Image (cartoon, rainbow, N blue to C red):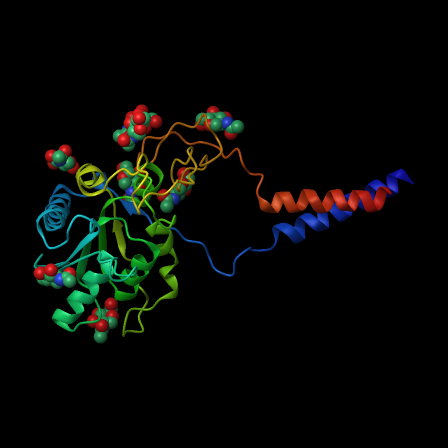
Length: 276
Ligand SMILES: *[C@@H]1O[C@H](CO)[C@@H](O)[C@H](O)[C@H]1NC(C)=O
Ligand SMILES: *[C@@H]1O[C@H](CO)[C@@H](O)[C@H](O)[C@H]1NC(C)=O
Ligand SMILES: *[C@@H]1O[C@H](CO)[C@@H](O)[C@H](O)[C@H]1NC(C)=O
Ligand SMILES: *[C@@H]1O[C@H](CO)[C@@H](O)[C@H](O)[C@H]1NC(C)=O
Ligand SMILES: *[C@@H]1O[C@H](CO)[C@@H](O)[C@H](O)[C@H]1NC(C)=O
Ligand SMILES: *[C@@H]1O[C@H](CO)[C@@H](O)[C@H](O)[C@H]1NC(C)=O
Ligand SMILES: *[C@@H]1O[C@H](CO)[C@@H](O)[C@H](O)[C@H]1NC(C)=O
Ligand SMILES: *[C@@H]1O[C@H](CO)[C@@H](O)[C@H](O)[C@H]1NC(C)=O
């Protein structure tokens, strides 16, 4: 009798495992775009981006932006590197007037164009989900940022939506080119350009502030080491290897995911029913 019960339990457990692991928890394919850093660029391309990022930093320091508009942006022609226009955060007027949005709107007013294929957008800080989506809809070839959201939020305690631009960008496969039924050309994301300046001279660290409206209390995983590191968030003995090609391969300690959890729960319930 106990053998039959065991066999029945095994059958139920296998069926549950098949059912549980066979389901996707989202209708969409999850994609994450790569982020290119200084070490991924040729010396010529890096010099171009650093030169343009310096212009945005100067615009912030000397332009009409004022002390609070640290998110400043510049759009340039990808071929001639001609400046098309600048934009800067005007959150005092509207919370959605972010630097990138303002640059796109400003450039649209100036030029009348609505597809930004053939141009690059520079921004002092990594684009929030709203701005990254606007950049994707607009069809920019590249977006180049200085400080990362991870630095601003997790390290500088600055208010941000905790979602990286390359995660938003990865879902762009659903789009077609603006005004053009051809496949979407992914926006290339280049990060950390002159972050040695933007992290400290443009943005501030608010962790000790008691008065700033930008102060946030970070809710971050201290052991996060990068999107393509299979140890991310689980294996504390894995050395930090973000942006670092030489990092050793690590194994994921946390294969215990939501599906495994459901499987264990259902098996447990089945055991109670069968053996009761
Ligand atoms: C719009 O772009 C122009 C030209 O680059 C710049 O001088 C101006 O400050 C920008 N205006 C706003 C509101 O961003
Ligand atoms: C449509 O996309 C193709 C391929 O990217 C491009 O050559 C063409 O100029 C685009 N047409 C318009 C109207 O944007
Ligand atoms: C920032 O880094 C760049 C190289 O990426 C370097 O040329 C520049 O001198 C650095 N600036 C400061 C202020 O550290
Ligand atoms: C915050 O205050 C602590 C304690 O005074 C200090 O050690 C730390 O360096 C400060 N952090 C920043 C970013 O100013
Ligand atoms: C992530 O790492 C795996 C295993 O090393 C590799 O096969 C894959 O190509 C990597 N993906 C990206 C986007 O770098
Ligand atoms: C950037 O360079 C590193 C080191 O060579 C490499 O591991 C990584 O895959 C490169 N990233 C991209 C997006 O090509
Ligand atoms: C790359 O990773 C190795 C091993 O974790 C580390 O020793 C080295 O400092 C890292 N290099 C950079 C440029 O981050
Ligand atoms: C954690 O990573 C280290 C370094 O790759 C590896 O040797 C170790 O087996 C991993 N531990 C677990 C529990 O996965």
